[in-house]
Image (cartoon, rainbow, N blue to C red; front, side):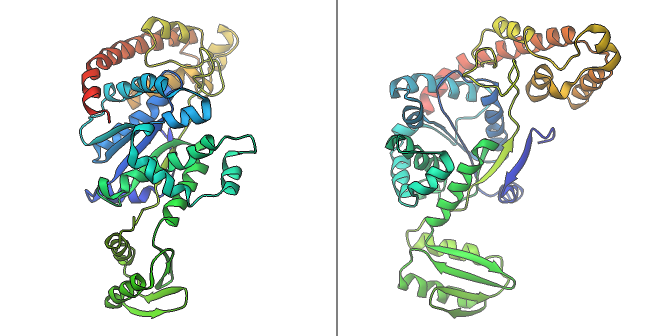
Length: 386
């Protein structure tokens, strides 16, 4: 966040309030196990770990059902490759206590919730969001409610009930997160609208008895009127939404908060473009041998000029350099140091060959330490994996 790698959000104020007031909240992400965990995944893992340090309960799902439906990866293969992601998550610093690590296919509560969520979706909106067509399989379509259930699961009764939930994501995930926010509202018994100095509370699925009981509770907090389609209460009391939520819970409703999200920049691939596990040598895997990673770095695209003379005269372009991104995103923690590297590059004092060598050494040391911690994490993962 300091470096604006995380640059945008939806409803992050809910998370800030939870952190500041020491209230329960959760952070959730899923990993599709189609390759090896790489530095792009590490960006999400780092954020989950940070949220845990702020007091969040962590949920990390291996999206094996999505991998089967969307990429035809067998569940057995996902079970094996999925552990690689969770091992790195623990090795990077996640405490598996007070954490849910699970496979979608093996978490029955998530699957049940996905079926409920699917009852609030239709083909038209899935087609517009995901581009589904007549050749799209039912399983591929069903990945949308499964992903939605992953995000809503931390708020279910077995997980302590409604609480703010944050999902770190890339901007390409925003349409999906907007869908989940809508689904969280559609699964409520009541909707709440604040206008000027009054609230409108509308029934979504509540019975007349539940509506009448809610009205009685609200009368204690302001002048209340009942209309054909809604209850209206004249008040600015900020506790009204929580009163409605608690009434829902007492009547076996979910009372979901719409999930929050933050958005981070994509890493540039070592060959240019987006870092992707489907493009060979564009990424560094957290399981790469340190020397192999160093070799990739030495062959990577930089923001340097065409020749040494021009580099010294005009300076480099660190903002367009995959090597500088490795340092900026992952390898240099000291803000003063990273600023010096940037300025020296811009002024032509830092040459690409030297920068690559230093970055390769940083990466080799990081991977060596990380992979040692991965070995230590194996027993821990076996104990905590659901």
